[in-house]
Image (cartoon, rainbow over all chains, first blue to last red; front, top):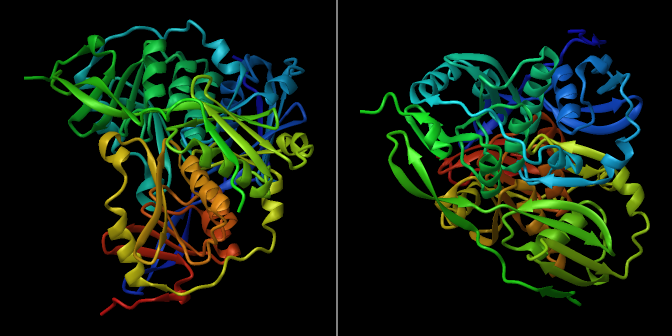
Length: 272
Length: 272
């Protein structure tokens, strides 16, 4: 498919920086911390939002954000994307009509990944009656995915204070991204899949973060049938996972996990 | 001071619910999960935002959110607050002029507590050149606060998937709140302090969450000189803490902690 022209006026910025800290004995130590920087997103010269991000894959993040917010529907329509870390801005130009933006920007829902993410009014409407593909999940796949994932999360190991998200298939981690925000991480992966025209049907979505309503919504938007999390689930996350028919496996670490939805689609092939 | 009339048309909702899950052996277990519900906030009959929240202290949350976003400045001006869990809405009526709202609502910054919280354009401007009171912090105070805090976080112990925030003074936890979002938890405490006219000068702010830019901004807005976190720090969180003169103690658990800013104001009285 036609990819948009992506221009980066500067190299991607550092992911971590070294700082001096003092431990409980007053001893000076050097620690790495995660970088965090603003990226103001403009769509057809209209300012949409400023994302605070680690900035590892800004092009995918910006497109994924705009797509997940319902501001973009056709990847073919994206003509160019300019990322400029000198002005911390991203400019997206499309040949789609974006006159509806002003309406959409009016209705904000502050979501609870953090308590206060934003999701615009049109998103839930688009997902009415939507169901992800119904597939079987093998217990052994859960274990092999968790095993494969242990080789990633570099920034977290170095600096902490970031969330990781990944797209897995069978025993393979197809894509892994970390960001200071879980939403940014999932938007980045969504942007990649969207640009590549990948189907979510045979994928597993993994996150280190909690499964709150807006995380489940974003996974549904990607058409991924299985949601795997190291953390827990909230009530609305659970309700939405049921609504979309997503198999939800949380508290997943090592050989332990808990199936919150879709247990009937799980083949406990390792059991016993 | 004059407190606003606070009307709750229904009791506060459950904090956790029981759900059936299946463990890695396919065995059915009963687990608690954290509740999460929308609360649409209206200020003088203008819809501002929908918060996704656990809903434990909705009145303080709503007022703290509006105050932290710069939509309210004078607690005396708040006439009434209606919380209605049947329609999941909160209506705040003030005798302050809120015509500036439309302007403020236009400029959004998506912050990185979650990646995508919202903070409106006017907030950083109000904090230009602001410094919190400069006070000494004793190492023993850090330890006694951490010890006192271990007796809280009920929802987390039951269900996980929530963040806790607290206001501490000396060895005392003055107020503790949990929410599905860190921002909601800090806004709730900010709302309480604001309504009670409490000063932040002698307080310590504790959070289980990461210290990202917008968390530090909110603590500065409360005038609290010490920020204590069980988690890590991001670069912008650190830069802002320096800018506001906040003493930042992160990775604090048991007897371990790391001082990221303000080490010169810490009295290592337990050391050696």
